[in-house]
Image (cartoon, rainbow, N blue to C red):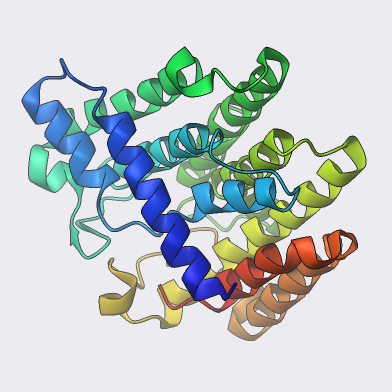
Length: 294
């Protein structure tokens, strides 16, 4: 299957699953539900749940039972975007081509919408309606993966370091820490969750992990390149705003950053070569993430 068709088809499947999950928020106050919905269905590419699905299918396992769990990852990602955009963090007015959550609903509701999405994600992960076909042992591993990626030693820790070093000189080691945690951790969890659900052995899981870490860093380098050279209308957010941040452009320059990006994509593809034809979609996804314009 061509990657474009795969992305289109899987995105529709993820969207429908997200709508099913969202329909369970029956007693949520209207403005909170509206804020959650506004961001969750704001034209995202659904890369993280699609990576989970692709990793599961690379093990020749159907991904139907994984879908709600993949949606929980997307909910966590969406919460992080809401909080990142707040005036006290990145102070962004535009996200995915339209006003950010706090611009529409106010800071307080935006914070609580993010809190709700994070908490509800873990409700989905522990709700028998969505997990009855997954063994308790596998589910425990999956919850651990997602919680570790989202928490203090993962995405939140990376975000804190990003804030602390904003406007400072920093180092390449600090840069690496920030992006291995802030960006890569949830991408790595997405791939590992799919691989775990697909029944990967320990040796295979190492390959999936290497793949995920490479594409996670490549994704961030591409973000930094887009911030420096991208088209705001295509990207859908304000660009050239990261001058004080720890970026690959700041520490390596644009040319070396592009070389590093290519190297990481090659490493990602090489790490899963042993999967043979099963790796095609994951390899195509790696190339796509390294060449995206949005």
